[in-house]
Length: 182
Image (cartoon, rainbow, N blue to C red; front, side):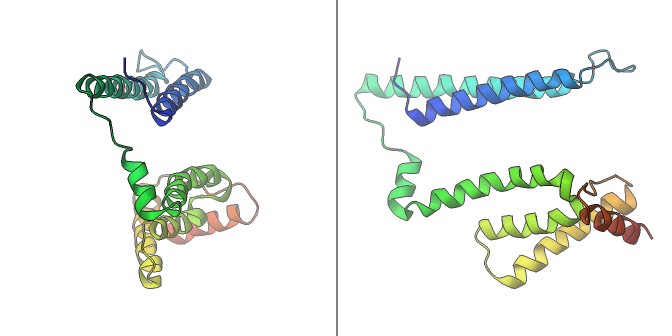
């Protein structure tokens, strides 16, 4: 079979490890649900299975493409990332890494700092990372999205968005809920 690149091996190992870790985490909330015979963890496990199937499918496709290219004697080019590095330099990868890490940082902070405080900063930071640098748009667009989502979930759907646990953030989150629901 064809020889895969380090990035392709990293991808399959990453997604396989992610699926395995996520599957083992489902045992923490797997309990019987009265109206659903498969239990509370059935849907998350199905999503995990789809993630694993997609990773294996990508792995098999990469192997087939590489093998077919070698059989024809064709040298595969360096790929998308090599072209990006040649054209734009290393800052492209830094920006890409930050763009991918930003939602993870947001998710990690959400329980402690709360939706009401963290979300506008996340939206503005993400908009900035996607290339928007005009201050009018960096403030206006995130505030509009934040306002619409907050009013819909807090006032009309009465969904309990995280208010935060840390002192100050908790008080701010509760103040926002009271303000919006009046």
